[in-house]
Image (tube, rainbow, N blue to C red; front, side):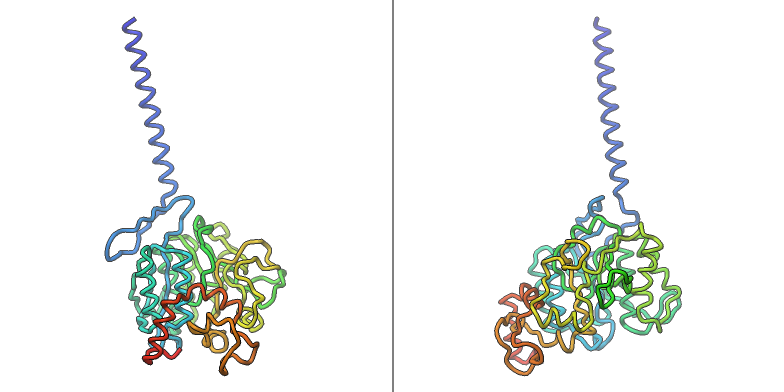
Length: 364
């Protein structure tokens, strides 16, 4: 009887050890399945990233901007609209780090206020990344600062992953539902809503990608045939061609996700001259009932007429206009954009802006 009892305990112990070993093996296998190969977080001045990729979140909590690649900042030094857009990203995305890739560092009142916002956020760190001047890519000459920025954003996303945004992209809501995908881009629409027409391409003003995503690596490799004379070939047309050729490598969202309204004047008037557009309701003609994530302000097309007149006080103005600015349409400053943007323009910021303006440090 003693022998049978001892043998039973041994069998029981062996069974328990086998079960524990099996559980440990399954846990290790699950971790391996969720691991992102070649993930190398950007070096930080202190501390380490808390991000660990999972099947539910492949996109790191990093936010990338590329700016200041020309000495004159493309004629648009860091301004009020840039401040509003970057502040909207801090508040809605709550990134762990913002990597600001630059060649010429901005130094305006609005830039200093943005840095102040990051410091006061308590959860986001700003990392300034001094970049090289991209004069060539794979031996092909690069001249325009916009093409230089196209290359740098892809390199940053390839190496580190995260979210890339142009500085004129207003973030309307959290991108969290998209973080489980390898790469995400949105269609850039034609200036109409005919669903039978294909999109112009995939706009690179908003890109989400995990580190070393195959789509980003493949896209960057196409710059071996880069031609500086073709303005949007590699930035808009090429990713759309690649998406159709390799549909499992990218999640493509419709035109209403990131880039609606579009850049034509009728669309710009809709958000800057009326109250008809809602940032928090699905578009009536959208194929889904989803709410937009971002709004691209199309600064290159809209700045002079629509964006430049805004300032920290005017964005809060709900009454009739005074003065000559923007008098050509309507009697009120209240519009769809001002209603959305003013939530990112606080009273303390407005007070400091008035003081800086009185000192002659800012003219708008």
